[in-house]
Length: 107
Image 1 (cartoon, rainbow, N blue to C red):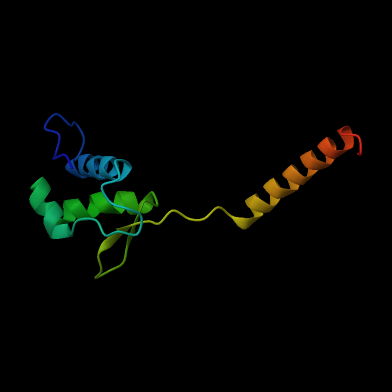
Image 2: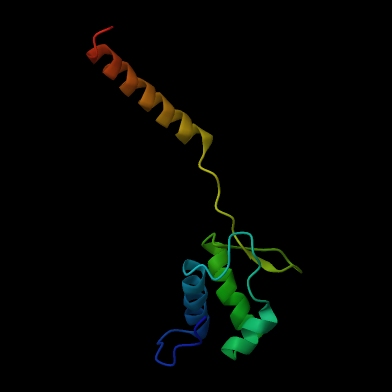
């Protein structure tokens, strides 16, 4: 994972959030896996714990991380597609099949 960008114009927490986002996109952590601890992130970026907490909060708000007080921070597991979407897709496929069956003569 990259460190802070010395040329970044915004506050450090935004740059840290971007670095974490890039690491997530690169697959550094699998869904359901804990990311680095707050202490490790403080050491890596050389910032205060509050700055790290704010950066992690950005990704929690985006729905990419899950944090519970007193526990590690985890990568949000990818949710299963909603069942109703699958049911609608199945209905569409059945309708297409009906059309195709009408086009093909029996026998």
